[in-house]
Every structure is written in structure tokens, then in C-alpha cells.
Length: 64
Image (cartoon, rainbow, N blue to C red):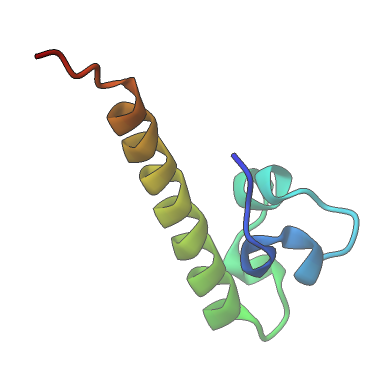
């Protein structure tokens, strides 16, 4: 999934991928950035759901 720059983990921790950040880090791991983490994680989950829905829509074959 292509992520927007807003969702890039590099903004949070340089050198850490979004996938690694999402799977291995929690809000407690970021000093004083709990809200930032929660917002980022929510946006990443939303992006994943939207990507899944788009794939479903793209797979629909229209017949007449």
C-alpha cells in the first residue's frame, strides 16, 4: 500500500518503516507523543481499510 507522506513513520522515527512502527511500537514508546501516535495509528488503519475497499471496487466486473 502506498502511504501518504502524512502517514510515513519516518516523521516519527527516522529509519523505521510504517509497518514496523505499527507492529512493534506503542504510544508508551514515544516520550510525550501519545496523542500523535494514536492519531497516526488511526490514520494508518483507516488507510488500510480504504485500500481494501478500493481493491474490492476495482475487482467488480460490470456486465450488461
